[in-house]
Amino acid sequence: MRTRRGPTRAELEAARDRLLPDVLPGPDDPPLRVLFSGINPGLVSAYTGHHFARPGNRFWPALHAAGFTPRLLAPAEQGLLPPLGLGITNVAPRATARADELTDDELRAGGRRLVDLVGRLRPSWLAVVGVVAYRTAFAEPRAAVGKQDRAIGSTQIWVLPNPSGLNAHYTPATIAAAFAELHGYISD
Image (cartoon, rainbow, N blue to C red):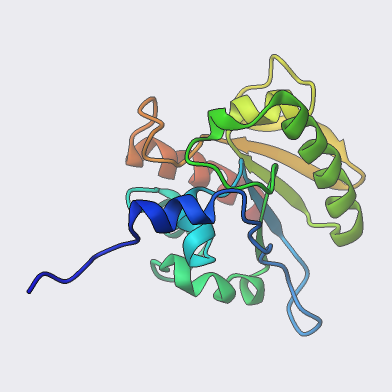
């Protein structure tokens, strides 16, 4: 008898367009140091209810390798982030199989939503994981990975590479190094 390891195609398709709740601090959590913003939830994330949940996504390993978490967390442990001063949201809330299914209008609307969310939460840093999405969402066509000149109030912005396994331009090591650069910058 074979044990099923993941959701079926039909289950993933049923998750399309679902909204995934943000991982944000509660009243007993420390101030938000970094709010990580993905581009949008993938279908596996929408199906499981956990951010960066697709097998092969390098977010959780990079977060740990950079020193943000004391151990490698599984997506189902995302609730352990707020006590560490970390949170997760997305530029665009709609779940899709690939980020390129989003329209520029959705990304621009997501940029406005992020500005509002950051204005309310006032994290020290907004870290957008996906430079192409950041460029569109914030009308910054020349933005590159790293610290941005732009800020939202007192919140500084850092752009990280997209940790999706579909992003072949970055290896797990180079993604971890980009996350570590941010961690080192905010730890100084």
